[in-house]
Length: 79
Image (cartoon, rainbow, N blue to C red; front, side, top):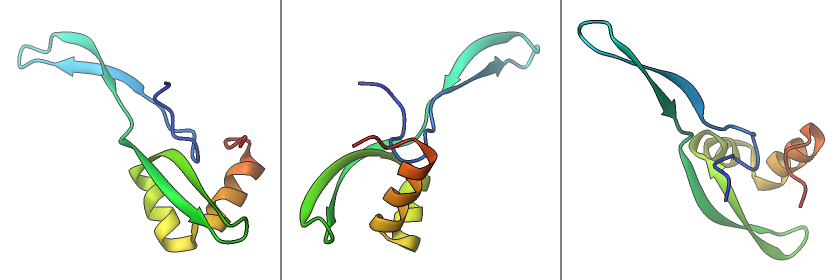
């Protein structure tokens, strides 16, 4: 399974660990992903999505239907 948010498209970024002596080594900043189930009343079904914490905040603010509609318009959700 890929480490990409299904609603926002967030994925891992690349950066550096910087030591006290300013030595730099590569590292990854992974997205804060979790798998959640949501009930969509318009379609009368449950969907299971892998989403980031920021996408969950958007769902709490706007509602699942509006967020899924936006994700489909932006090309992130293909279900």
